[in-house]
Image (cartoon, rainbow, N blue to C red; front, side, top):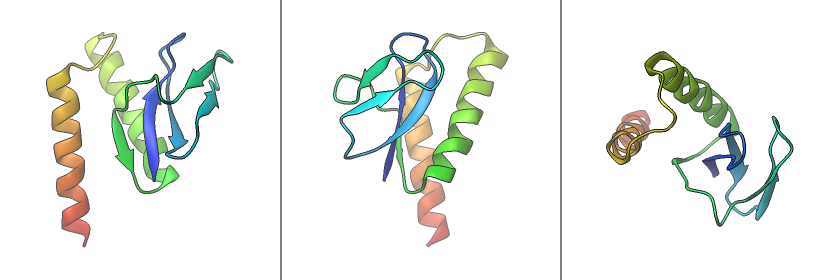
Length: 88
């Protein structure tokens, strides 16, 4: 399982294995504490995480927003759960 998180410095989305404690930001090089970072979504595969990260960034860019609202995060999690259930 992989967690989709964001860098506290440059606000870039990234993903980590759920057992990782630290992640080096691929954009700015900041060390990200996984425990101190908000988790946007937990996904099964890193390829899914990469696709979702791109979609999240495109969503924010197109709406000129800095972050997702709590409602948007809840909707994201709900839609992902529905998608996973539909795959089985």
